[in-house]
Length: 335
Image 1 (tube, rainbow, N blue to C red):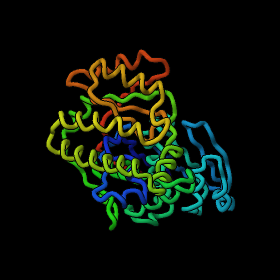
Image 2 (tube, one colour):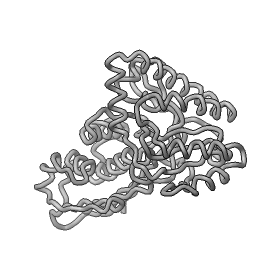
Image 3 (cartoon, helix red, strand yellow):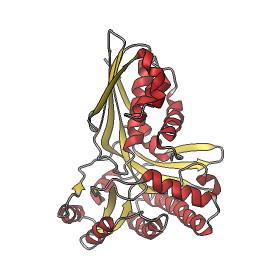
Image 4 (spheres, rainbow, N blue to C red):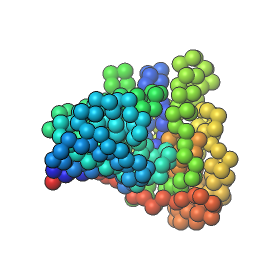
């Protein structure tokens, strides 16, 4: 049997970081807005006739082997730690080869690990006979990934990976709810340029520092989160109204507040890229994920996306991403 699965990465337009439990509980109306990318994370499982278990990451060029009896020890395995812990959680009873790959750059801030998490869960769940309903996937993903990164995980990334499309994720005391947004997706594709800076981001460090300061009662940080909450509300309304001037204004207003969240949210190289892009056709910038490197998304003036991409490509180590919006979330196929 061969099982193949994949899930999309994402760009967060507004509301990031407020999706971490319990931070959103202190900000009624908290939400995030994101859209899924066709840069997907994938998982391929092929069953075996023996008890060998071979785990491999193609993009990381790491692999190792155990057996069915050794699955119990994968809870402490540090090689391919996310994959190992997920295999330990599902505990398959047949031998198999598991191969993963990610089309997004490592440390890009595009939720590649969350997309991979969902893709692996989809494949392993099929391998063990669809043990869990799909609505459980996000809970499993968040709980397992938290034991890997050892800090609280945000929730928005799993929803984009599972469902695809453009979403507003609402965070309330009675639970988390995804609202699919019917927006002009072709306009998003025409107006947004995305570049990878070549510097992997520091998501765990930045998010944990922010979380601790918030819980400790930092009033300035609390006020910044109120602004993050408000920017997501404004972004949702602007997208639904096809008000692209307001989309641009919301991104532009949110950027300086984002920089104030944590030291190192942007690097000198990121500041240079933003300055060059804004001087050559970009209207606003959004650091993807938790900053400290990774990707930057630029909202470009009508007809200026190629101009922005051209100046970004002039910088050493910078990669302009060739992307489309992904309307598909998790896909699992079995042969």
